[in-house]
Amino acid sequence: PTLVRMHTASVLGDVFGVRTRGRVVMHDVIARVEEAGKGVIVFIPPFTVDLRADLAMRTGQKVQRPPLEQGEVLREYGLGAQVLRDLGLRRIRLLTNKPRRIAGLEGYGLEVVEQLLVSDEDAISTRSAEMEALSLDESEPTRH
Image (cartoon, rainbow, N blue to C red; front, top):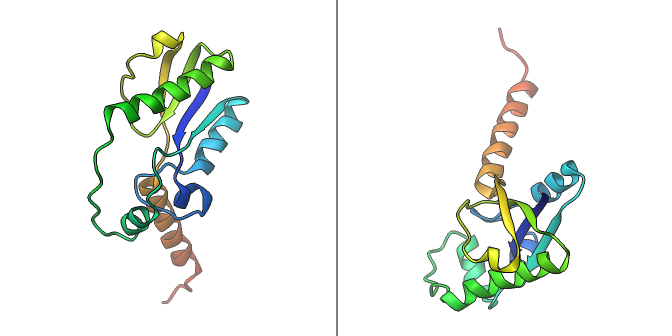
């Protein structure tokens, strides 16, 4: 089975590197694919681009977004499934930050044999803060 990441693109996050909670860090995904020796990352363009709402959300403001329409969700799954099928994939190991059953993939001849959790910004921020705290502790001279 091939390692796969289906990634809905974020202009601010993926193009400009603006970090936010809940977004998967592509560096981690790329490292996992590299470690596996092969894999596929499918970058799905956003259905709509609302930079103002994205920026507000990333600065901690509450943003009321309309829920994704069922058609939009199916569009994303369908686009990704078609790409994977066209690449000749049948059995996949899915890198995901939200493990769940994905209905309808069988219709594209795809089978998810495993879902692997990929880190998101929350986990990265926590790890970075922990590492920074450790390095600060080590750099301070010991007082007696």
